[in-house]
Image (tube, rainbow, N blue to C red; front, top):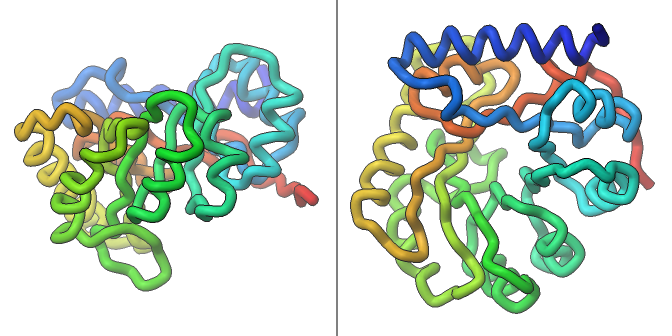
Length: 230
């Protein structure tokens, strides 16, 4: 068993336990392997271990791995997407986790050849170093997206602060869950908003307890290998 396989088994055990604590079914949680900083070879190990959802944050890294990996993969773009790079990314990915401005929505509308599943990024903690809408602005932004026929908002995404304070982390995730439920109840045709993308290597168990349906796990799964993509 490779290190990646061992890591995945450990993560699955923790996902199961967190789901139980949150009175949830672990089958409702999708593990996204964040492969943005590892080689094609390491990414192939992840696929061989059985993971079918991969996350990238650069067009160059995405393209390189798309060309190398032929398996049936769901590709997630999890980083900030510059408007000028939409055309080189949007039709190669299945999910975009970082929709946070109308200029990006307009470019997706122009470049996408089919309806794209998107998460609206919310900066719940309002950290200056992170992108995303405030909780207060996210709901009105959601309604503005109605005019874009190539965008389907399936959920919300956030990142918790890098802190050891579990109460702070849990509050961020809980607040996003409350917003997701509020929007979902409106039954907007363009924004079912049933999903929550939140939780990374250090806090995914808390995220699952608070309602995450997609967790983005990098280091805990793929290790700390680094690769520079030219």
